[in-house]
Length: 88
View 1 (cartoon, rainbow, N blue to C red):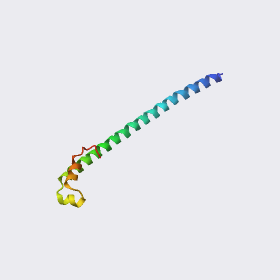
View 2 (cartoon, one colour):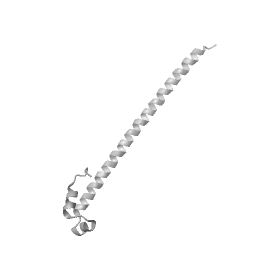
View 3 (cartoon, one colour):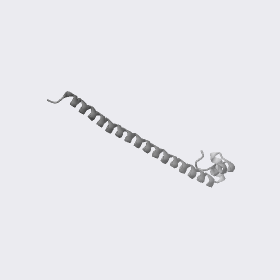
View 4 (cartoon, one colour):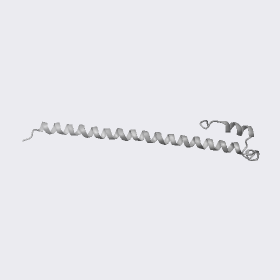
């Protein structure tokens, strides 16, 4: 006959073992989610910077007729075009 304490000890060790595995998996996936989200934010930021740089470059190339159409003076357009890409 098997002793009941032996089963209780085995069940407790099994529970600890599987809890550790599940905890490790949860940590892995939460870390991966953090990395993925950080990477996505970085890509979005670089994309925003690229759009700003392209828009400012295009703004600097507009002639006075188009600047008047959008309500900007040559000085305002030049000031905006001189801004670094990371400034809004």
